Image 1 (cartoon, one colour):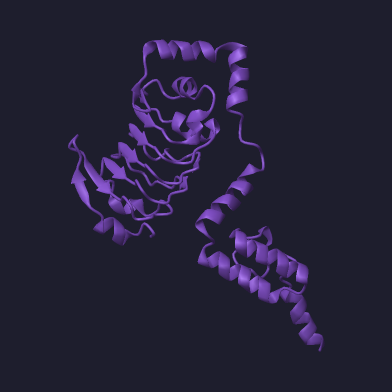
Image 2 (tube, rainbow, N blue to C red):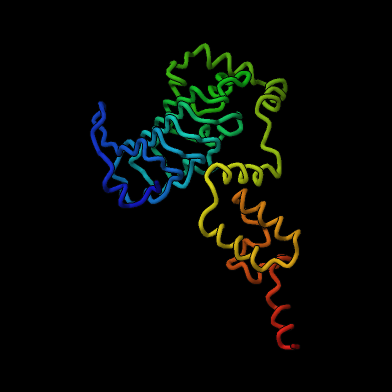
Length: 258
């Protein structure tokens, strides 16, 4: 179910134990975050638990929002600027998702107001030195990680672990930067999980109908299955995209000659 303005208006609202106004969007099988500007920044807490979110991002400016609950989704990526529009976010609950690498958590480390973070039941928590790495890289405002309070001795130990050249090498080992060219692969995987959009389906089907070779048909059918629009069809329209499967100008000239 898409996150429409109608859904936002019909979703339950309540006060949480901290007397904060919260919007309950649990269990609607929402695949992506959109249209949140329709909340008019009226909530301190938004609960997205038990949905089908894969990538976290696309938040409008929400200065009032303090708590983001995202338990039991399929989140495997966080947009680099995911939280740039949430200046007062203090708590993020990501229990039960699919974050695998420490580098994928970098957007969380940029949150200057973050106090509580939960990543339990994510593969990333099994990465070597996960906890000291997060303690060291997150803002000093972070007080509770995975429901355990961060102790002063932990901060000191994390600082020593990642100090100097030895510490830099350790970071390169456990949290290597994302390889160049990995984004397209991630897009393919994401599209395979969510399925192609109707627009993508129509563009590829049209290109298949206009294809002139078996090779082109085969290539486009693979694109249809993966749900990723080929580069030569990513223009505003299929015609004129420059791909070998679409040669409208050539066809026109043939008709004139005939």
